[in-house]
Length: 228
Ligand SMILES: [Fe+2]
Image 1 (cartoon, rainbow, N blue to C red):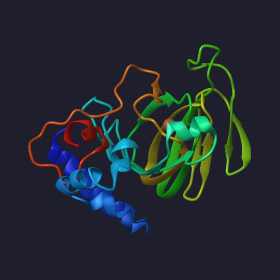
Image 2: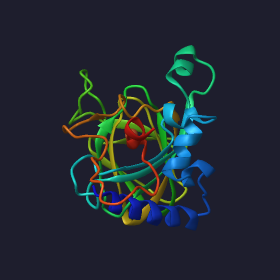
Image 3: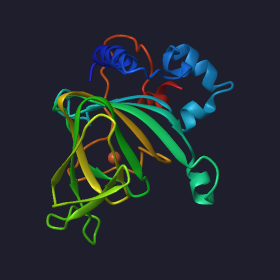
Image 4: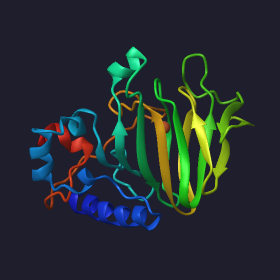
């Protein structure tokens, strides 16, 4: 993706998120220089736990069709998770645009609630895991939606209106997209590690490669290793 496109998506997404009354934390708006300075001083957690902007086209260069906007608001640590106490949780705010697909994947560690916070309908395609952890093309899949147990056929489509959510457990295969409009999505989960805990059905990347045509408005988490 071009950096100029990333900058535009940041501006558009910020306006969309604010239109639903959700405001991101102060570090969202620090320019790259300030973020670098603060990470070296009192905010190493932003870099170490990979908080911040995350815009991905899954490395395929077709953001409108295959992509996702994310902002990691908070994220605990694997050490706390192993210890079974402390900051075991994470929160993201995301946008799935209309008909923009987040491809089929599952997590080994993370359980996540995916919440429709407003906009269009959120559609999730769901499969259970087979014995090897792959997509089971036949088995029914059971999930909780706001405490209600739902059982769908393999590849069934779960549609969430604003206010509704689904709990996805490790091993639950899922792809999702917006229907009828762009969707503001909340994610509440266990600790998140996007470097290791996304298993995609098709061989695909998790992050975009960036063509630097203009300076970054804000850094993406995928910029941190190089810039901070
Ligand atoms: Fe997921």
